[in-house]
Amino acid sequence: MDIKNKRAQVIVNLHKLRRKAKELDAAQAVGTDKKAEIEACRGEINVLQKELDSIDEGGHTTFMKAKNLLGPKKGISEKNRRIKWRKEQVLKRIQKLEDRQEGTDLTDDERTENIVKLSSFRKELASLDEETTALEDFNHTRFLAAHKNDAQGDKQIDEIEQVNKKIHDLETKLERASKEDQNSLVEGLREELHLLEMEKESIENFTHDLFLKNLANLKAKRRSELK
Image 1: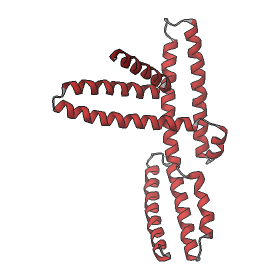
Image 2: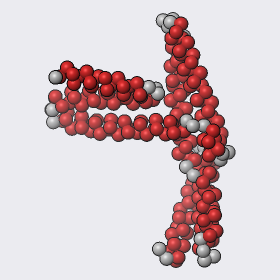
Image 3: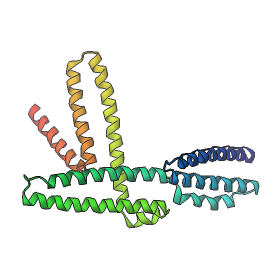
Image 4: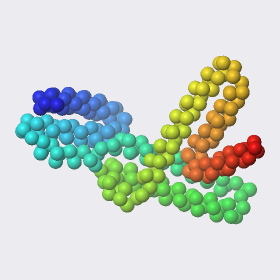
């Protein structure tokens, strides 16, 4: 792409981002929390403006230095969504354990086990709160250097998305099979769908490895019975 076209493309992108920034400012003004998205958008505008300056100056040296300005702010909205989702899952788990602790049918060993789990989840919740603060202060890179649970959270979200896709595909097949009165196929698809919903729940409850192990044992047992 020649310089003239490059400059035109940068200007178009700048207009789009400035329009987006105005929309975000308007949403923020009426009470919707858009602080992180506004900061990220302004960071992108800053970088594009410096790229435009570097083109006008006849070189990209200024731009290459300016690109680094976006680093700490890039992806803030997505990271905040991931943290929010994970906090919701941890809070659900804490609530379940606290409700269970109030039951009268628990043994002493079960109560002790619940206390250990509660302590672990509360520590994770505190860590997620710290991560949120780090994002707001744009110190996220340094935070992740000291906290290694980010990859685990991303893996969990990826697993949920994969299962959701399988559930969607299976529901489509089930609907088609039902319309065509393929009763034997419908029964098998419903069983698969039930297992996928159980798998999704196990991911949300942080017991996915145990679910997969039990599922493998179940399939092995069925294969043995069919021989």
